[in-house]
Image (cartoon, rainbow, N blue to C red):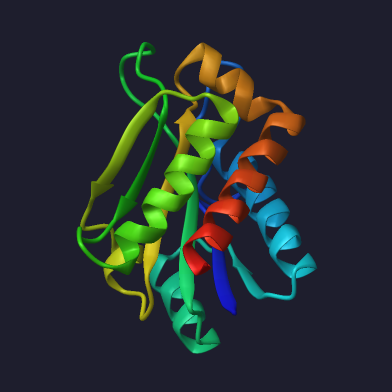
Amino acid sequence: MRETINGGHCPGLDSGAVGATGLQEAVAARDVMQRVSSYLRVIGHEVLEVQENELYQITDASNQFGADLFVSIHCNAASSSAAQGTETYCYSLGGQGEKLARCIQNQIVNSLGTVDRGVKTANFYVLRNTDCPAVLVEMAFISNPDDEKLLADAGKRDEFARAIARGITDYLQ
């Protein structure tokens, strides 16, 4: 099995959202990407980690790698600091992307107890330009004080990574 794991945004070039404490989405996403990849490699999967500034570089790398599935990892943000929880996006409902999104969403919500904001569709570049089932995971809201604490804690980031990896293996069963 070959998976592309994408850490959202690009440290040093595009921080993504930034929490009240200064935590950058790109840094948290990179850490979780590396942890997910490590867990998948332990069970014999081939994993491409990609975190680039240009979206076409991400999807081109995944497509050239011949990935069987694609997971992009992000931290959400909103103008209201009250917004919190986890949501996972797929390009359209009814297919393998939705199935993968549900597996990952369920694992995160059940493992970390985050607010379940559900599986949603989006016309995101990385979802529509990959040659395999693709999802974008918004782990938690970096703009919410409680969610940001989860994202800032290395142990909790590891829990997110384990949940994402388990979601992938659930999907493959």
